[in-house]
Image 1 (cartoon, rainbow, N blue to C red):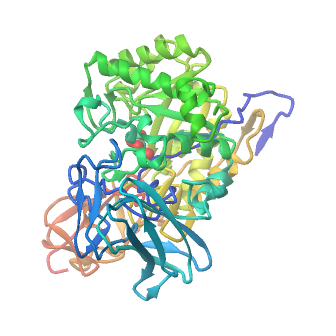
Image 2 (cartoon, protein in one colour):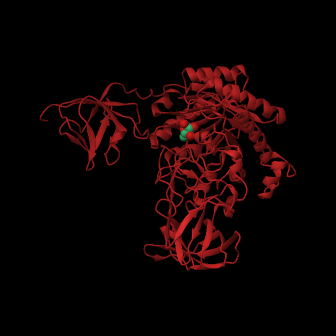
Image 3 (cartoon, rainbow, N blue to C red):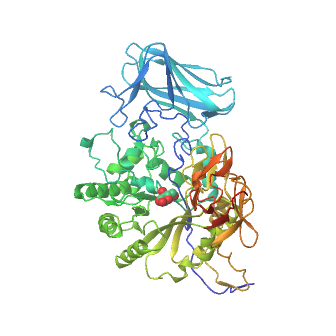
Length: 614
Ligand code: AHR
């Protein structure tokens, strides 16, 4: 039974309480939310960033053509271009399966080109079954760089289309681009409509961006102009704004190249479009994300701090200010109303981080006293690093501290009261990343249960965002995720529906309640549990793990990756023809689901004794 006292007044709940966290992980940006259909449009992919990349990744040249980096380049940050021979062509394969077009819809092609003697470019869209649009001819008239455009109307639908540019005479090409006309809100350099609409439907209170570990990309490296542009560079917001052909392409913490076509301006614009508070995260020169390093370089630190001040001016400054002018030139004379900024992500050297954080905060508060500067508590939800970080945050009277955790559904049930005991006079909490390990209904349910604890403590927990937001099913490197997509479709997880429920029904105030006779929490699974199809042969398919109560906890058809399991005991294991095979049938084994967190609903161990001959 639940007893509610309508007259009692609990914590006030801010409209901004529940938000989203967008990070370019799982190819969420290029090939995802950013609507560009051409991959590696500026020929900047680099083997230095990913051993499988070359400047011609996703491109095929027919005839003669090579990527050149010389004084004839399009710009300082866009250094490579394609030098295409007379009578030659180049074809782009898009992302994953290819370029997605829909019959009857319009697609805008553009290219930066130069040709000493002028040339005619024939631009076509096709897939293996034939043409997808009437080819268009573009006449290049200048020997200097200029942009040329054409529009296609698709005559067929396909998710594995190819874009080909053929040239009658020798030409230099760069920024070869194809955008659907039908982007979110019809914006140029816009967002893929179905994905942006899914974010908008959540009605999030804030958008945290651009990472995550992504902001740690090279954050301790020198990025002075003298160090050159061809090397791996740090993530800097200034690289992500301005005309797209002037934006850098960079390595991404998550192992691929990012075009920065979706940059800070677009993040601010998205936040504004959906009525959410923008919440950027800037690198702190410590890190974070598995790298136990703290840079000792005062000049670099000062530069990052200045960049952060400039970012605030870019967001909020008048159109007459240095960075406000840049924003206005991009089409947004009015400010974006930035109120919060986060310094650092999952910094796991608390003392080193804190020394730098304080310098950031002092500089920001001196110039922008109304901006809330958010600190963080490292990568864990408890432990020495976490405790040290919290103590430092408390001592320094920090406004708000970012916490992150990815745990089992059971943990979420058992920790509903996590914030009941937090200091009411200490820093507020920004739960910047959390998820239970899985995308099943049960995961959603346990997250919902946990969120009631966040809401009950809305005086302490001020902001909360599930993470990560997106996964491209053709490039999954982290799961679970809130929204899934491929080239032509997108779908919501059960967790998404939970987030939507909370975000679209944010209350004004908590009404205190008491529950009695509530069902007990799921019993913790410890030690051995049964395996229903285990002990008869040396090869296993469709293993099912059941708990003591007979309920199924985990199934695995072994169609995937055997490395998800670790074993103690004898024998070696492999996946053969969709079966999981053990070589030594006499061994007693404990198998633990270890790799992909979405598989194991519990921290479970499955134990089986195998006897010779069985
Ligand atoms: O959300 C995915 C990653 O999890 C984030 O980049 C990082 O902050 C955390 O470790």
